[in-house]
Length: 497
Ligand code: NAD
Image (tube, rainbow, N blue to C red; front, side):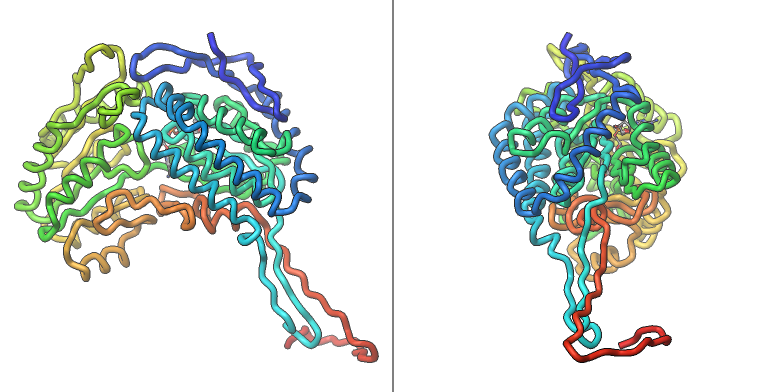
């Protein structure tokens, strides 16, 4: 059986003492094995990155950017292959995989600005004949650890910027859908990247812990679930590393009584069920202000959901595919059953969906649950499935309190025609990414991405301008070239201007 291995110092390797099955979630079949890197293999990847660092650090930003220009072309030329790999192992429909890849490529385009982004800051005459400037130096070896749900895009949030800033990189993708991440990274050598600058180790906790403990790794970018994000952040920090760890989410949309209800329903249908709800920006809770809005919303949403098509990844007519594993399927079904038991109302039930010809696939149909309340398990926890909850409240203040009290603060959205309400909402909501009549407010590549509260551990957001700060350290130089003949004696007071 095909083994998905590692990329270390430009070499493809499949060495592993342990392997794990990789499934096609549309069929439930095991299609490949993924090699799980040992501590020793992971250390070899770190050593390769460390060895490549001095020469790469000395390469001009313009030359580093040229690699990214070529890399972007290669990603576009190989888009069909990449989307097929994503679909086979993740299950997302081809059109959705293409969207993911395009958003990933936008981060490569941003990385092409490296010479501009790394220009630094200069001040002439900060004192008599004294000039001062700040430079942005790379950190060294940087690691990225990524989740299953965006196997192309999330790694591309990290290494293009880390690499153009002069660092070398070790990526540990999700072991559940490893092939697209590995294939994409292999294109960098064709783009002209020297061997060892980019390395990939597939694996699990053993590989991750090696990256977290090794003192040669200077920074760690992580995206995944909140318990693991917290573990990564505390372990990396305790080992003296810079760390950003993006975690889980529970994204609420407020439906105000004055909202354009058809627009809100169309937006939420895509944002709740697209990619089977396996997006950290999926809108999974509709908070309806007033019973009348809730009744209209439920009626229109139930109607809209009648046309949802769930099925295999390679049929472009499908809206969304299976969830990632059998275990995750059981978990999502468990949340729906639990909501029923805890007193919520199942309006549209996606349990027991069967897709003809794909009876062993991990499919859950779109599910709509009304009368959900704070404290119910389905409300408090991230479901990560095609399940939309409806919470009924009496006022916008109550809706905002609900959001602000939730442990997660990744994304949110308000549907309204009232500009004053929208402004009040965006000013006071404790969430990192806010939409106003925009259901998935995922920042473009020249802004940065990140949540608040337990959706992000660390100070800097992912990609965009924050990535330059995260992947570099500042050095400030103050320089004086005294004119001939001007000499000052010793001064004992603290220098001031
Ligand atoms: P996960 O936390 O299970 O895995 C993420 C990574 O951590 C993987 O590479 C995995 O191998 C590794 N890992 C898992 N358990 C580990 C352990 N015990 N020790 C060390 N490493 C471990 O997440 P997932 O299921 O792959 O992805 C889904 C989650 O990611 C959801 O919670 C989703 O909200 C979140 N996510 C967040 C964002 C964001 O930007 N905030 C983006 C995408 C996904």
